[in-house]
Length: 324
Image (cartoon, rainbow, N blue to C red; front, top):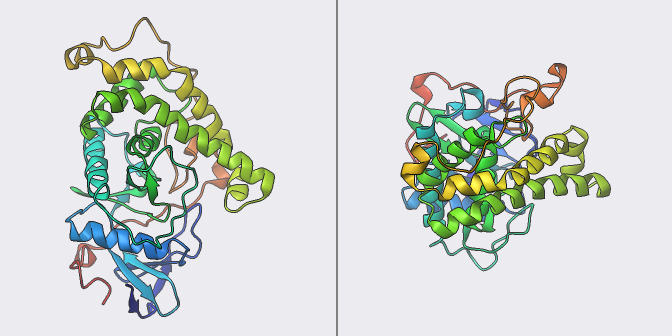
């Protein structure tokens, strides 16, 4: 299944990730530790490449040090740019829909192993499970989701719901009406049907509250990497974010299920909803982390990953000749 690649002569550390340690760039490739799920993830990435899905890096194999070898994707992560427009949110939704439609047809090997952090409500597709601005690399019009280590079977709306948390975003301090319109743009881009629109608010809450509880359980048991992430303050974001999502469930549902004309006219929802108390600082993220920048003391902000795009001459090697 895996091609054996040589170790890179010149390796540059890629810092800023929350979970994977010792991630390096070697030429046009990324090397990262081999996990129990890596064989299954590489199989999935190769399937997506065969199906023409351009929004994921190529899974290239394993190197002579036993590490995963993936395509290096040049560009800038979406968390380092201005908040997405409604049109851009729609594009993200369409990318996720294409992913789900492809993985609904995917048949992994019988011995496939996955590293999901939360039990899915049901298994409809293979989810990415960490669709977020810190995992979306953009280089002009080329947009790619990176960091597939947590991919696993799950439901469509759970994966979309997790994406909504980061891309809308749905965080304490938001304006529920404005956030609802942005959530609607994401769902419209996905092409949610009526049942999916009714399911989505609860799916968002399941994933966001689930992350908080996973962090809390990790702190109690010492399980890596959750204990460390809890100590770094991640639960301080996810707990209040879950409360925000739950508190305004009816606003999300009204916006998602309103007719298009009502939504354009601002008629989604009933009665006034005040914006929540502002959070300290802008609602942005730092690196691949799951905590917005404003939740961290300035002195402890983590370096970003991946680095800025390399010179144009090094970008996008051919799909089968990367890093050779």
